[in-house]
Length: 447
Image (tube, rainbow, N blue to C red; front, side, top):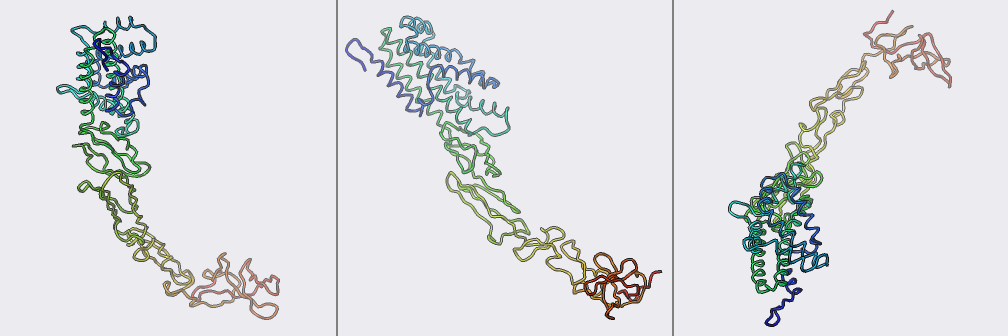
């Protein structure tokens, strides 16, 4: 990199080397970092999006000077490279940013303290993470941790902070090279490399890595820095699926349980627990219910992520009358609930009613006998009458049943209407004023 006693700096090689330091620990930085204008705009967006959080506001105020200076010299460096300003202007503006008391090294260390946290203060990523979650919770009751929005915001913030630091170092190195102080570049480069390594290790030190499960909606925590120690993530599954557990915690580099999304058991319940890092679920039918195709409880085990969803069989076969409706009974050991009168019908000419999972049979008048075996036409006779008796045998249309002697001198049955016995003979309708009515022998004729 150095050429001859004059220590001529190959700036493109220096830029490539410094870029390598930042690209190595921060994956895909180049896919996010497009321009300094984008960085500047995004910094403003960050400050505005979390302005309600006191802790974040205090951090921004405390370190606003170094953020402003780093952003300013990075912008000047970009303008120098694209020819917007000349070298003299660049040296004048950058030189005015730093003095012996407020040197670039001082501000680089200040930026490092912001990234790492000092004393009781959290590092900048944990502060941003907390602010992001709190701000989202104010707007919606839905969990934000490990959603795609959460991941995108964390990724962009991390890459932005490293990119801003890197661009400031490049801008200052350019200033040192042009002003003939290239002997100081090695020191700045060494400090920068050490700081970046410390910052990246810290951001990834306490995370728990990927959090995944089939049908889990907030499954976008992938990198170590997406989570941190003591962080609680509320689970949310797609559709009607339920999560186990309802929330997981990050501790010691591991999530407290392997999450799983499961369907609720119809006429039963699902119980899940974590045993030695394995998620175990058991689906059982409620008392009075069972499954003809799966008589035993359904069991599920997941030893490693991502856990598949658990959909237990349905408990749609009854085993006791008590689970059926009041007018129904359970048919068989693993049966179905059916109307009691359909399962155990009454005898002929009897009416069936059901309640409390049992039936009651009664004979339909004027039929008599055992309604459970069948009601028969006992004590009935034909009576000569010119009117309708109160307990005459009637049709479904409530017309009294009658018989009369026809033109062939034989008896023909019909129904009483308009005080006549109406019957059919030889394809024609006939009426008879003299007829007999079928009735119970105990009923007297009406006047």
